[in-house]
Image (cartoon, rainbow over all chains, first blue to last red; front, side):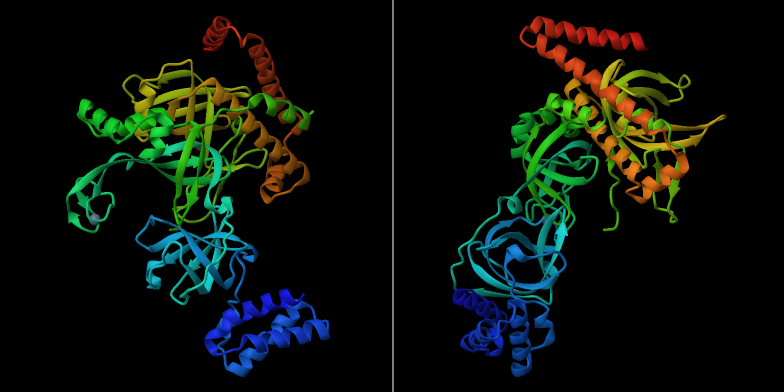
Length: 307
Length: 214
Ligand SMILES: [Zn+2]
């Protein structure tokens, strides 16, 4: 119980330490309430928090964002999280400054730092307190969003992390119901890597470009649609097409569009098992394979249900 | 971004063909939905079945009519210049053959009754394994709708019951029949599995059966 109280005190302290609160004082008050007066923990936490807010003149909005363990996060909460950045991904949109996974000892969660929030960059492997952040749910997964009103403070502290494999990668089965036209052999801006159609980058205008192979499309399981992006590594494993082969095909047919046609022919309407991770708009596929259906085992189950 | 892509629903021909009721939520950009007798609100479907017919409605019209069969019945689709991607691939496809189709669903007023048809956005060749998986997937979602209708679990289930008052035993029988056919096929398949020649023969027979349907 003493340890538990220390832990609760730590949480309150981390949330309000900017205001000069003292960990020892917090722990003593908690101990008094919980051990002597047998007050339930959450009541004790509230009581101490209210005391601190009055005593140290802490703005009310800080109250809405208590330091919370990642495992305890729910959607649509204003919270603060003390966590380590374990993975950074390349953002899919200029609106996102950084995205990836943060973790603490209770679990892991995706995060997004909006470009508009104008926050300093976080680094992979470093620990931070993300204050006043908001949570939401996207494609069935919780995310932590860092907005303009959030604060990121780097801390010099090693956090033992528990990375939930589910937050890192999810997997689902569905049919590829559409392949978008901006798939296949595409041109990318040498400056920023954005798609530069006809050698024109939407940001840098007429630029030097390089070839890339990618798939943009829609996977649909009958209940949900996923806008997906798969790179040449994924396509190599799935249909044995890589950038070199794509270039060859385009050259032989004298048509870059031949690559898109080939992707459509091999993939449209096919059931795929995909693994990857969702960010703002896209599901980024890290691995995909054709579904090998196990129909026989399902048949009896279905007949049982409608006998 | 408010635009949200419509889900491609899984539904058997029997259920979709019996749909007559459409739902249009006010607003120019809002899609029209078809409400099926089992309470599925859909605007787009994904179908894997046997394309058993394909012909140009009138010579030089550029409008192609196709018919795609699943174990419960068949659906009619029209492909024209308005669906360039589907049209391009359709020209290379000759029935009978198994295809995967993503399509918009339309209901129009026929001379005697309302008719459901598909406007394919994508057509591609598929195989028997995928078709079988589609049948299983579609059977599962149909059973879920039957159960929802029995318990009036959703608003659309209530609405469908009020409008159609469907004979649920009929739909259960259709699912049972589709799955039983599949079961027989798989049992037969297991017997043949070890000898490749027999396997090839079975595929030829299956193709032959389809030709008979045309
Ligand atoms: Zn650029």
